[in-house]
Image (cartoon, rainbow, N blue to C red; front, top):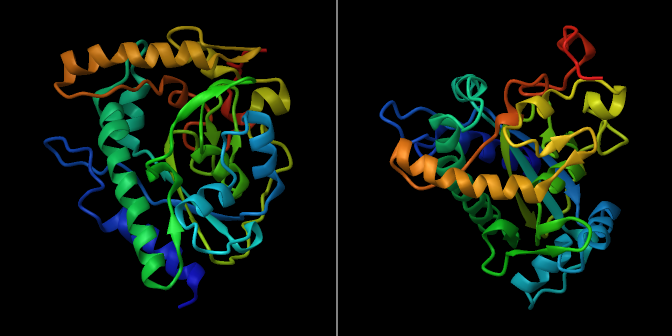
Amino acid sequence: MDIVSTIKNSIRYFVNDSLNNSLMNEENERAFKNPLVGFSNGDDLLYKFFKEDIGSFHWEPIDIFKRTFPQLKATPDRLTVISWILPQTRATKLDNQKMAIYPSERWVRARVYGEKFNDKLRRHIETILQKLGYNAVSPALSPIWKWERSKNYGLASHWSERHAAFVSGLGTFGLCDGLITLKGKAMRCGSVIANIQIEPTKRQYNDRNEYCLFFSKGLCGFCIKRCPISAISKKGYNKEKCEKYLNLTRGYVISNFGFEGYACGLCQTGVPCESKIPTEDDLKGKAIR
């Protein structure tokens, strides 16, 4: 089996077979469905652009790789970013569709326990690659990963899983800044960087917002109506306002569900791009123009 098939199968088998892929509720429901996987080269100019646009603190793949493996003589062109999409289940999406102010319990569980599973998947792929003789690091698991302030965008992290997925051919950004993939926007994503050369996934788009009907056609805007605090408008997405609201949901989660966590995701559900790349036919005359 070639290395690409090995990586893809390792991700898919872990998602489909691991007992950790669970919402940790009484029914022990699965957190995520069958994943999407993509690859990008560490030398892709988009990574350099993100660093220039977001801030010097934002990592290119070579930055975190060298910090993790300072003894290696790595070069950007010999690195591959392995990115994946974990689609939410139908039950989780249906639950959150019904909510108007706060998130559903399933959605919060997918955010809390689902992300813990995502961390296990990150570590699993790191381990498999290292056993095969490739040094690998998941930026999100690095002890030096953190949030900082971007002059252009406010709160921003050292590494963005959504941006890595965008570079790796897995989707484009919507009006609410979520990533619209073949399996829609209701998902979580992760990545690992390794000193391995794999043919990059061909991006089937030319623009960062190509799959969003609001940007590409001047239509839709369902996510504007779904946001409970008006953090999304025709002018774009207010990250600071969204972040403050997410922190406020912590009290609701503890009081109503009995565990610690936060979430929202209303703009990712009950919208045409929830589970697919939307088309004009999905709007059914209800678009905001």
